[in-house]
Image (cartoon, rainbow, N blue to C red; front, top):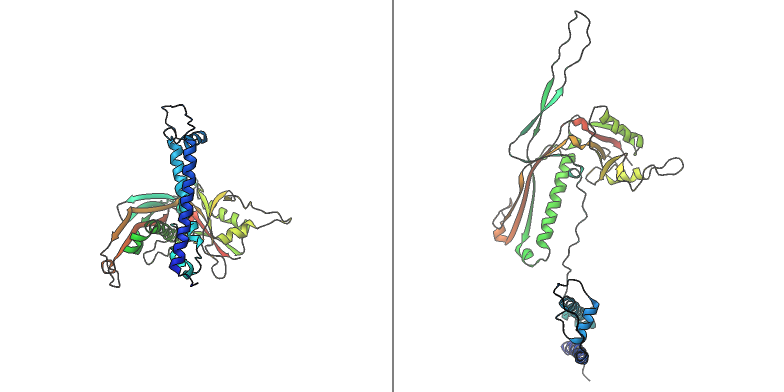
Length: 383
């Protein structure tokens, strides 16, 4: 007997599946015809029902009258629809999908309409609650600050007192352009199930992370703001090795001796620093810190890989203590989101000729410290 072709075999499988579905429908119809004769009624009420009732569903199924069980009818129909979808999946699995010639060609590929996002660092500076100046319209914004105080003197009778004059300086805040550009093909926008939402979320996260890195360690050059650890005059504590609780207390003291208010102290650290801290033990092998605690020595902390890793030559700025009540984050205007189908890039490529849509997001931000003494960083910290 000649071997059946692939098309003939697939047709037979489909016919078999349809025959099973028809037989099932006949059995259900016969059951309904037998139960309709035994009518059971339920008391009527004008109050709308929203909850599912098994008794109403059973009664309606027996009598075929769903007028008093509309909620149950909708739920049953939804369940039937789900079962039909599952049956379609089982029909596909009847065939040998691993071999194209035995049915694989007939089973369409499917991609879940979900996207697993990339693991990213945590944005920490804004989460620690600095002072915010939003919606600025002038540049530069200058804030006067007292830099020197008058001098008190004790003096004897008929003795001239030394004079002194308080001094001032200024904090200058200027807009630094925080920017992202993403190019999307129009096919992605037309056919992609998660394209637009994915791009919007990714751009927001990357903008926040880029600004966060600038706020922490921006160089002050190439359009970057000057980050906290690069401000002139901040405090520091030399560790000269691994993490040490005594050195952490030294960092707190560094702020206290400079009369920092310490109203909103917070730690920022590389995850490796926190790991080394939480495994510290006393002489009897007991942990010195509670690994489940959300504070370090009474102050909140944030872990982020945006801080330097304390290995090799990267021994500075792996751990920073800041009084965030003295940190100012400034922003000018609102976030500017522009979509273009005609833009041209620096290489001469145009969105129009490439049939693409380009999205540009821009924010203008800056960071400053009311008092640089409110920042203390680690140096010489290694693992």
